[in-house]
Length: 91
Image: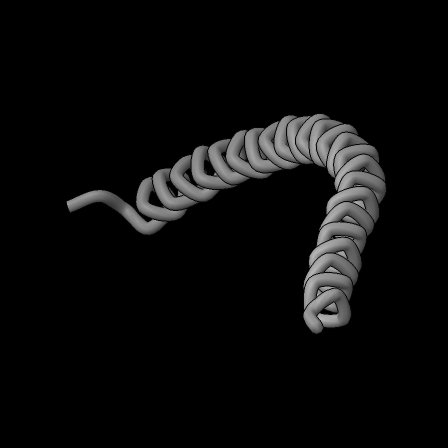
């Protein structure tokens, strides 16, 4: 059976090894956090670019919507005027 000093020395070695492993894990987590932060920044930049493209598309669609509504109103007014003229032309 090992002596008390040998057992304490063994435990100190184990604690030292665990401490070194914990430091490595901590460094790995920090490195991972940095990589994730960089990646999220890249994703944010891409999403901002997509948002700008959608804003341009929305503006374009709004102007086209105004044109479509204008054409529909013009068609409706023309149809109503033609029907009114046909009804008024009856003897």
